[in-house]
Image (cartoon, rainbow, N blue to C red; front, side, top):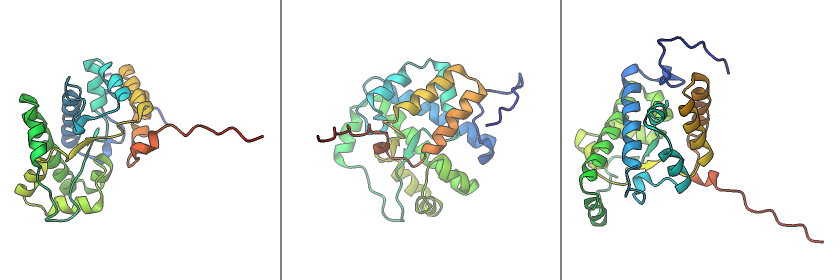
Length: 221
């Protein structure tokens, strides 16, 4: 990979591959990623499905200082997935059990719901302005992109109100998160670019891909 010269005025927070999005969208994505980390690492939310990283991943993120987390948030992709309908009329409302669980979060429930609304509407903006980027940044399928483009504002808000619309990406990929945290801690453009490229390679990877291989069986004598 070519290491571009680093100028004093060049920010180390600029993610690799920024040509996919406008500067305004990159800024909003970084803000959302930072908010997602802030919410997800709040004590007491470990069991929330929106932030249920594995214990090892959570430990790695908790060990990062605020400046490191800011650099982590500046990745050229979302640190979360959006689970969206793939056809109009298929949105499911939150169940009674979901509302009861959400109510237990107290003041954090409002912030989590606000985050989900911002994320869904950012996805809509991406589909409208940068359709090619929406598949990379948010991993949106063509059907999900079509749903976003065709939905009314009220439908977007309804989906955003479902607590299952947000979930973490790579919740068990400990090596990737450790690499990203380490690169963000160093803060050098080269380290961040390598970490971002690794994340882009993992887009669409299932959590099962991070599971350890089965133990080898000893050959029979």
